[in-house]
Length: 388
Image 1 (cartoon, rainbow, N blue to C red):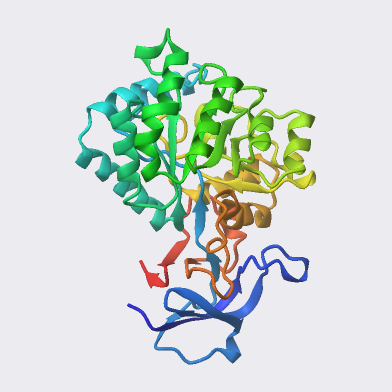
Image 2 (cartoon, rainbow, N blue to C red):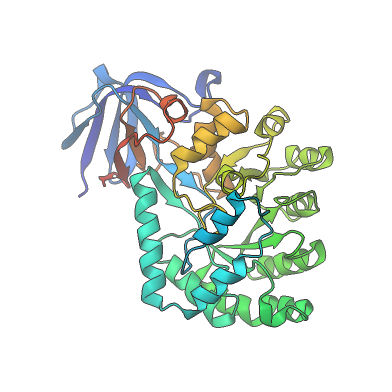
């Protein structure tokens, strides 16, 4: 339904406009006007214009919809037993990815589509209005292409992750697999993808292979993203900066040189605290990144192995409790930061011209997202100005 919609009686409006030295751009006793799916006006409630329809926020906080810039939703099966083993003391190595690859290859299109739809609906109920979706559990030409074709039914931010791990059938021939990723797999996947990504990590792809794959993706017109420095120090972060990546993701183990490289670039450091929670691993030091002037995003890393959560509020709470972010920094990172990681200017903010993606909390302030962890605080979601 189009026309105008007024959201009024907003106790605290988070705009992310950065005015007056406040990155969240908080406005009190505010209202917001939506026209044709876009924010048309924000201002004091007492000056609110007339509209065709009205949503009464009842004094609650209103925030931009969350922007989840890192999620692996196209898969089959689960790895609950692997999770239980980790909780009993087994370390996380990333090797379980191949288990999901087998299940995904065996699944039908309808089964994969149902999983993506279920998880995307979970995200929306929890306030995520924009989500990136990766491939990476097919690892054949046909399975990577169909994963991205299905992902594209749910988002415009699709990422080709054929370089997730080397599949078992290529275990002794990694160069041959890289050649396939750069050749027929990329050709089949590129029509359905906006981005290309590589898991640059021990046990996955080294810097030379990652550079070659990303360069081929760039030549095919895809933007660059990179899994980097999750399991230990490595070349991934600096490689991402070198190649102009929109985002390097995980960033758990960083050197001073890594942080200097990020601080001198427009590459976003996307932190995924759900992965550290689910693998019982050290958390990234967000404080160190923020103090150096690095742009930080938060995302769920929703996947069946190392972070099976679709909840951005949970990740906000973890970031505050475990990564030394303030509540305001965490909310910004989960909204405007995610938009920066996707190089989107139409989401992650509530200013005139932005897409009218917003959430009404069952709380008076954004502070409650970290203050009341685990509580379902998302009262209402508007996506493209339409109540969901």
